[in-house]
Length: 190
Image 1: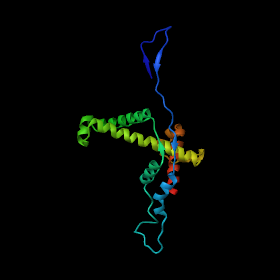
Image 2: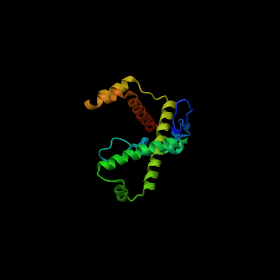
Image 3: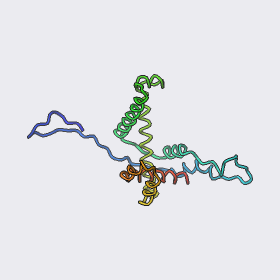
Image 4: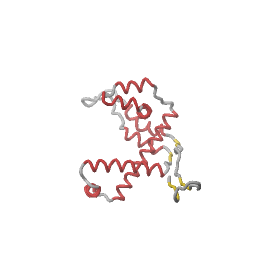
């Protein structure tokens, strides 16, 4: 939000607010795209010996499943959301760089990047992360994937003692994480 001019008693205020809404998600044929990836793991060849230590067909990588989903859906994430998420990711990275005792210039030199490449990389990552988050939310909604209180409590009970209080205070966030994981498990099962 930005306020134009000064604030004075008895005078009208003029301000600008930038907002956005959640993007529309068209899931397209995501199930078919994922099924192409996961089908290989469901093929069992009778009489073929498995390599030592393997119990069954190789499971597809989550990254491959996610890529199949993202390429089969249609979604346009608002630029303001991408910018905010990129800023958050950059701030987080700058804190990590600072903890290593490096400056941003030193980090960029060591990775062979310039500031524009650095920012563009985080903007792409932010857009991908946001797309994935909105798509998983839509899939869980369409497939009626939900989380009940028992699942939340089971997760809290299974956590380390020092994490339990924080998890108990953030049940909504915890439910969201569990729902995302259940949605990813659903995708893997296709």
